[in-house]
Image (cartoon, rainbow, N blue to C red; front, side, top):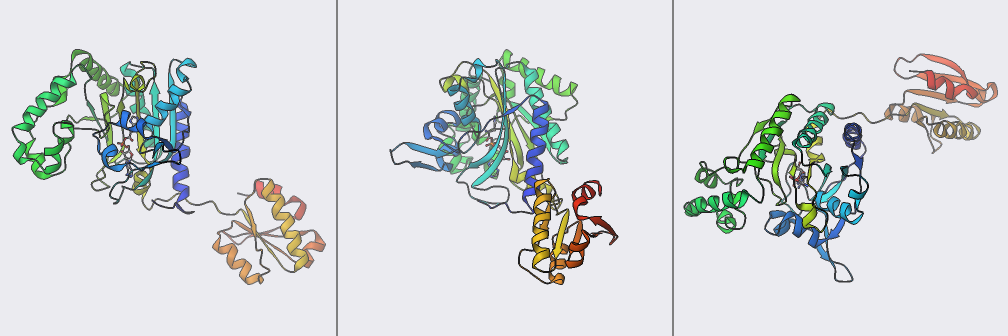
Length: 408
Ligand code: HAM
């Protein structure tokens, strides 16, 4: 779990502000849900046999012996809130986005943390493939706007409760014949979560399953048509993508379209964003039978990809240096008025020497400085110095805010 400090936070703010702008244009509204939910919510939605639920949740009993969990992801809480607040009665289509910390007890490494942040979006109420393409178009545009080009979109279809069980059985049969070549983890989970075996990073498992049957070849007509239409819309919108028939997601709620934005810049943590369709999830949690689709972006991974390309922190517009107690009081008033008018202004609070005050102005990268002494107070005006080119101009103290507003 990491602190995010001044100097780093500007990049975070840029990533979040851009999300608000882009998602807003696509008609999304923000939703904020608590960081803690009943444990049962995650077991029922993410799936009992997933890594997240089996090994990675921060779960504890509160003082009334309710089992609570720090949210490991945002979709289930948003669904819980959607149902509880009957949002479907307000609008047949809900487009929601969220940002915030998620918690998973994973082995930390570059790009993988125990508290991490997601920017996510969910659409409820639309089954049509156009919304799959729209959600992907929005994600694609977001990456364009934040200036990250080196990602590629991979899409897959995981079928539905109609076609997946037969495929699943076929995969189990296939794996059973190769059991001796699988790692211990896969030997244990091939019955309960056979798709996960396709995603195993162990070389032996990869080799043993190169010719495993693919879900894409076993889609029912409805799923096949849906996937074909998603691809057609993506092509029409000129969104580059590749089909990856081995893409498996670590959460059980997905049906039909799934996708990941991947990069080769982050080592093994190659997914910077991921998501898919989860028709059936809302109903399984006790809500109306509404389809849903969404994604979540890993903010730490975006920050890593932005690398040295940091967003510059804001600097003071003006630093007021003051000499003597009277001038310091006046500087304090001037600074406070400027701040109240929205101008980033600074001064020294410690009665330091002029030299020390100017050092601080330089350190803070102030755009302008103003030196206030007895003479300036008497005259009611002072020299405003542009720190970039050292040029000076005389300004009346009463005009300071106006002059700074027009100064570049
Ligand atoms: P997820 O694939 O588990 O999906 O996570 C989405 C993204 O969160 C990942 O692609 C990654 O960028 C980031 N992420 C996940 N775990 C960590 C970690 N330990 N440290 C840093 N970043 C991490 C979900 O969470 C789904 N709720 C996405 C979704 C929304 N599907 C439909 N709607």
